[in-house]
Image (tube, rainbow, N blue to C red; front, side, top):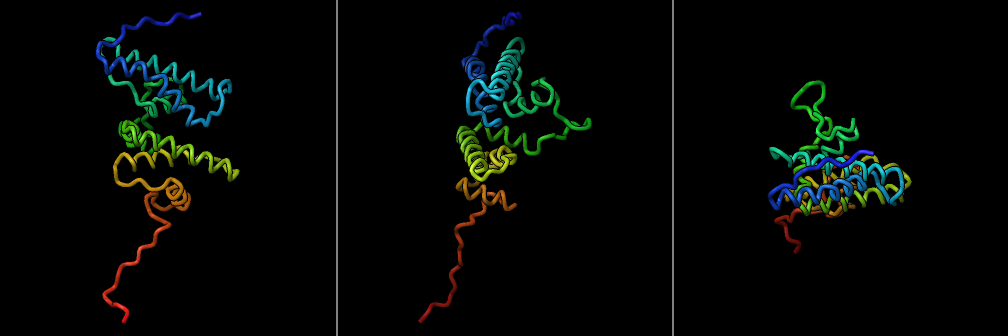
Length: 190
């Protein structure tokens, strides 16, 4: 049986908060991505394992010379691809490539509390829609990330149902489908 590694608590309030918040954020993210419904399932156990690894990663990044830990989405992708949360996610040796398109934008968006809440709301909506329709929900995470980026940019906050309809129709998710605007004309009826 292994014993936990002793790590000195960070000295700033912000660092302490990050350390205490890390497992909950990581487990909540994994539950949403995996669509976990109940404790005790294999996916719930995977989420708990990821949360423990992420908490250790955050603690390690704050000990010694503090460095920024990876974001939860980036750590999740790295963890799923090999277990190393700090792994380099570049593709084919390119330092600019990113294996998950838009990951950096969605990582930045998820720092915004409103966008993070809307991400989980959009993810839940799409998973529910897919379950009701009897289809797979493979696009749910990509859609939710795109929606969160849109919300974080403060560009728009379309209705999730309309945005999902647009996504499935390959239209921009911010396009309003239920409102048709007709420009007024100079001609007035007599």
